[in-house]
Image 1 (tube, rainbow, N blue to C red):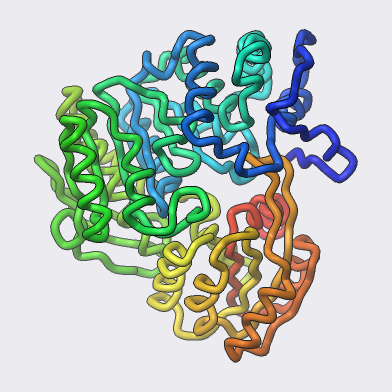
Image 2 (cartoon, rainbow, N blue to C red):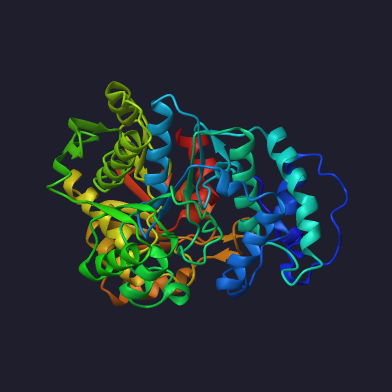
Amino acid sequence: MIRVGVGAKKNIRNVTTQTESSNQMIKTFEEAQQFIYKHIDADPKKRFAGEFGLRRGAYLLKLIGDPQNQLKVIHIAGTSGKGSTAFYVSQLLEAQGLKVSLTISPHLVDIRERCQINNRLISKKDFVELLNEIIPSIDKMRGTEFKSPSYFEILMAMFFKISLNKKVDYAVVETGLGGLYDASNTITRADKICVLTKIGLDHTEILGDTLYKIAEQKAGIIQRSNHVLCIKQAKQAEEVISAKVKSKVGKIDYIRENENIFNLKNIGDKIVFDFKFKNQEFSRVVLNTSAIYQAYNAGLAMATIVYLSIRDKYSIDRKEIYKRLENISFSGRMENFRLGSRSIIIDGAHNPQKMKSLCDSLKKIYSEKSVFLVAFRAGKDYKGMLKFLIPLASKIIITSYKMTNMDLAHSSEKPEDVEKFLKKAGFENTEIVYDSGQALDRLIGLKNRRSVITGSLYLLSTIYPSIKKKLG
């Protein structure tokens, strides 16, 4: 994974003030990454530029021929589970012998996770060639009101372009943030499928501080005549979504527990459930995970495949559905690494809703407490997350991180502030290790039976290569 270190921070500039041309051809994958990193804005207010940002991303796509509107798209939004659902949809489509592209946000280790074909990273050579195709259009923007696209807008343009170049049957798109003004929300085709995962409070400083406001943003991906597949939501969120579907003359199917997903249970380190939707029933679906919450994400993905098979008139290979689900797992989502008899679980839970889901799964599987290694992105509701975590912890190691190679510059909450809250809450067995790599070594050195690393996908991204090297 390429990191932009302290010495390279001067290269990260306010994208709205860039005026230089990019005439030189990008030659290497490292140069391509550095070019894209230069479009990261340290100011989140400029990164999340609302309607202006959406128009800016749409303008770049127009310059490259609007590839997003030449594709069959499954567009996925939500607060919790949208990355996992996108992953499952992409895997199940490929299992049917279809060609599929996938983009997820954020990526865990490699920027090319945002440009996958048939669930594999595109080559570094393809990535460089793809960026070179788009750079002339980026240069054209500099003379307009938009000046320059953002990091995320460039990557979305690259994804749509390669999806078209590779002639995929379906493009699976995870939104970056929200929905209404997200740079992925540029697909205007009536046959776009909208998939909505569980909606809750997150990114409240941008999306709004109520479930109603956030649901409005998430439902913003619904365009005219779109079909919507939605997991069961809180009543207020469902009212917003249903009203949006009606206003867009679309149709909606809700996927509900005990109606579509039922007989859910843990068996060892697997999840087993029954599923039915429209003309298809699946008994004893086995997931290669112990995370209970993944049953709802996989069920939503299965509903998407069933709906598409009816609409687009292809037969479902049921055997391949069972086989694929039992053998795949999504990295960083209750991923279990073994070190002899020891278990180290990593999960990217980064809001109270996700943390509750993680802790619910841990409680159902394990009776004894765990050692936790945590860091939380600055501005997140870490207090709300810790309330679920504290009852399951024997010890909490607190670390920190700084990242400059994602959608915007990210840093963690100060470990001292996290520790102060824990002690105020009556939890005394804490330790601060500021360097995340050293914190991982400390966790491994404790030799306890089970450990959990959580609190931020960016924490996982920072240490995942080390985890794979030491534990994989």
